[in-house]
Length: 158
View 1 (tube, rainbow, N blue to C red):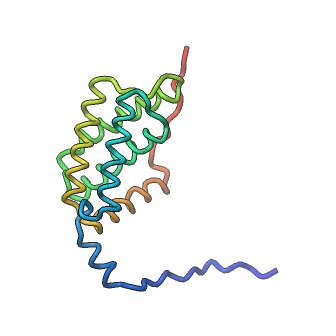
View 2 (cartoon, rainbow, N blue to C red):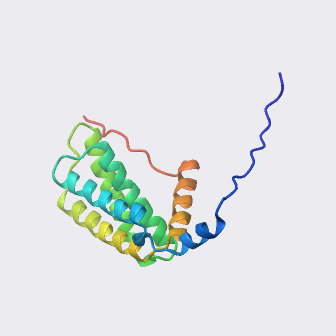
View 3 (cartoon, one colour):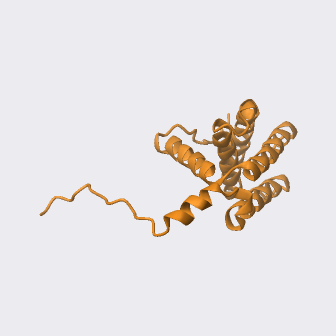
């Protein structure tokens, strides 16, 4: 049997100019990406606030805060990093409670910090171009591949 080669050719872009030009557009100006992303984030937050939160809604909130952190590290709100870390802790605590059998609900303090980061992320998306967002997604993917993200585990009940 012949040994399988590890070589994989790089994909070829058919329209390089439109790809470059789309990198300069603001994310909020791209209707399929920006507007739908904003609506999805707000809908997930509203569902959790209404007490109808599911694992999918929590995953969207986690993605939102991770994206806000990656964009902040790329100079779009670097001074907000401590608040973003607090929001990550709030979502982590809420998710732990949710998978432990309770419902996915925030405490008052957790809700306020996550709402603040949701508003920050909206402003980031309005001011961010598509290329910067792609870089942020690459950074998040590297963190995931290198297993640097925390796993949400059930709380120990005594």
